[in-house]
Image (cartoon, rainbow, N blue to C red; front, side, top):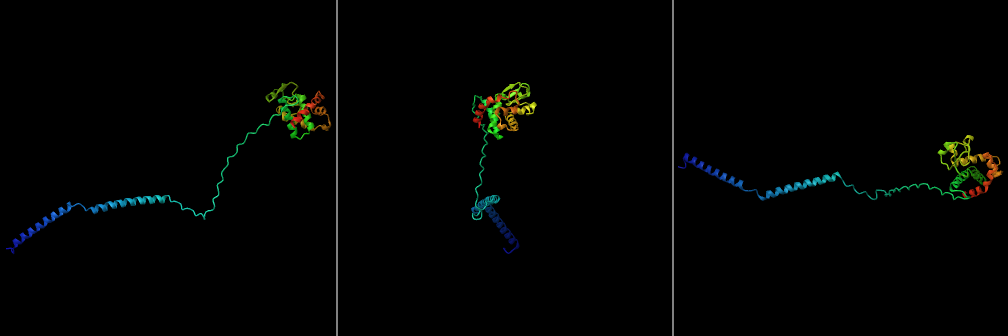
Length: 244
């Protein structure tokens, strides 16, 4: 009975069905089994390692961009010299005005200041002491040691002055006249210029040092009162002594 063909076919078919069912059951069983925990641990570690590697790479790139210079060998470098420190420049002080001379011989401060201007110019020109006295005495007679402008020359009043006179075009401490060639109105109104002009004229007088004060002054001034200068000699000498 088993040897017959139909029986063998039926038996084979039944065995095949049983094997198929067994395979299906085994497959479903395999799908439902969760992955072993070892696989999850390996996955997490791989991710961690990958993150660490990325951080190290970023850090190494940062170091490559700004490398730390190697310290120089102390024996190779020359000894360092201290850098010079710039000192602040001292501020320039404004020039102080010299003290004004104390008046003597009955002069006012303005008169004494004018006498000093006359003496200073003479000292600068190396005029002998006698010439300084002659110049101061002459200015005492001509202008009472005041810087005169002229009412005849309105221009003279545009410059510093201490009085106004009307004796022709005479101006300044020595009453010098622009029309006689002594200089411009502006120059003659400056005490220093007027004094220098007087000294230069005095030096042109032959033998002036052997003359009396009044004759030496007259030789320069050509005044209508040639002997009027003598009265001021003593006071002029006192003033010169105080200023030199």
